[in-house]
Length: 79
Image (cartoon, rainbow, N blue to C red; front, side):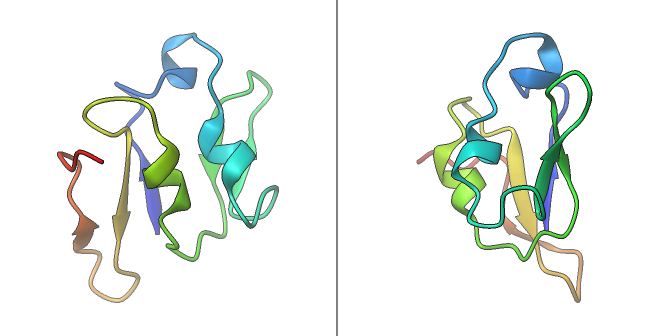
């Protein structure tokens, strides 16, 4: 499952980004946008596309394993 770090996510900080939403292969299902055009995780499958396209350093998205809730891709990953 993807998780958004609201403290560093550009959209959650008032800028318009939404790359995670735009590039998600399950757009409008895995990631939706709230009324303020901020990404919200819904039915994520954990593919990692959002992590790859996130422009912030460190990334503002991290992925956890559904079973263990343990991070598969730590927040400090640099792509």
